[in-house]
Image (cartoon, rainbow, N blue to C red):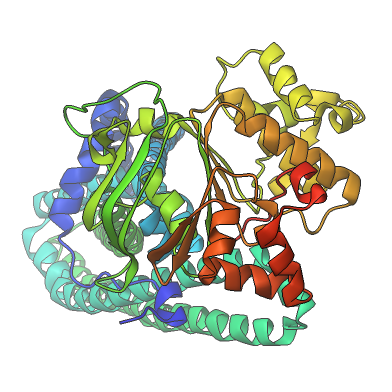
Length: 619
């Protein structure tokens, strides 16, 4: 079944998760920072315990000094109260520093692990998942975990300790009044359970919608030029409004639970205080309880409901973290289908001998893109792959670099199955010049070196000079240190292609794959690129994916693909003489009359013999 656009952009709902399993996995990230976390936890406990003293100060002030109208000692009591609050301020500062530091380090570790995992995922993963959804994992979801570590775990434990301590103090003061105060607790638990279930569904829905927005934005910003060319702005806006409205509605539905729950908690708390005033006031009038103790009980009741409310509020953070953690761990648990074998049979530089043996390949199920394909390429040989769009040309190059694994047959490099090669060594043997050159933000030199710091500056300049890129680079303000913007914005198509050729030459690959177009650049730049092609292909096994047949006549061999099968192979002249599929393709492109093709069958023209191999590559 084909994946629809909606399914592609729609984030999956997480359904049922196992919070304890997630918590156990999160503890692994906290383990390296356990000392800081324990320190923050101790500070949190101290903060809450010091907070419990406040009602006792009020009780003692009323019973010992205010009602007896005694002033001696009242100033000292007020000073002790102020000192306790100052101590809480100091503890709060160090607690915040420790917690936020731990949170930042944990986020760093998780993002690094996620990025490493995604970098090693096979290309098929990116075929199935939009970039915006993947970006959500590294940004929004990881940020949700930061809130968990900085606001959730220690505060939650502190609130639980505070609840236990408050109840213990209240029981110590008056058991019966404590039981009256706790009459409202079952109502509070019922409200919390209702809120928890509703908030869980709401957070799942919100995360789903935000991932869909990110995916849509990434796709349409990357394709902004196409949208504008076809005047599709209004349609794009209408689509975004629909997705945005879904996200808004998900948040509104979640807000409903907040709007009901927190006023309900306040109401339950007010009922509890009313019961204390009613029963406690009666006890005071019976002289069974002091007025100061009654006031302290009222304060303790407020303090009791505050951490319960905070726990419910922290539940929002916990829910966001649970949903985010589930998605993050689901990504981290993805198996990597294409890996280096435990004991690779081949590493190092290849000589360049390629052999396809009865290769069958499908991107999905048995919808075969390649069918029983067999051919071989000797070291240093240049071959061209031609055929209609969808015939499997680019698929062959992707399989060579093992971006995908085949279902049947074998692909050999230097007599060793690609699956038995060390993956890093295998890909290090290839350089690829694509039709749509991708440049990274940075410098010209950085895009030629592409992270390989062991490539010296002299070799970078030599490679640029060899492919005639140095001419335009020297005209840039900072030459090799000139800034390259995202995707090479500000550079012409030809300049970007020359940089990509310099990159290929600097890396000195054993095998070269060309998927490059020259139709949209000026004549002078086109000639430079043709010379660059010849220079980079020299002494290397080269595979050219081509549409313009007149540009590949000087390759050693041409392989004609049709519906995923090798239909013909041979030199340009041999294939024309055969008058098969290649002859028909050539005739469609370049024969103004049948006589033009017939003359070429008899004798190559002088122009043909002298012209460099110009290649327009697309699939």
